[in-house]
Image: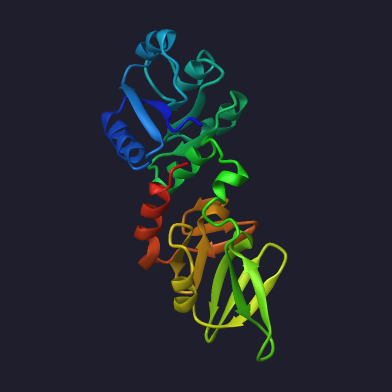
Length: 237
């Protein structure tokens, strides 16, 4: 599997380039090849080089980002970066992967890149969790339910109880999030809120202050935000 996605940044404003350079540097699976302030230079570069992603401004001298996107190799993914929302509809006509409005937040940038990242096969993504399970005490003094960790979406703290959320079932057990966290493999689960622990492999989308898992929304608490983004950015994709 290819470890890195190569990319270039095209923007006639150096401050915008510097910001995207910082964002690219935060994602280990991205490799920045070159930056450009003059879009016509990009055409000469792409005649001899292939890249996976172009972070492309729209309003530029000589040739617009929309025009440039129609010329580049179809195997190259386009992510537009612009201050002008009125070009969004036209960007979809050229099959852009995403459309980021300035000022661009890192979470939004990360979400756009995630659309392009090569996916692990199920056997690879679950390798550290495969065959691992926990017995959770449920109704009754001696009733326990075996739950494989690959099936867990997230844990939700409910005062003296914890809800174990599976895709089609919720199990309530008498415990605390702190105790649950101590039993979980740290490379696969992370606390993102005072009331939530999530499975990193189950995350479908991250947007603003929320994580989406199988159409369920989990909030990201301010106390946990920094550690959470450092953790997901350190995961090899």
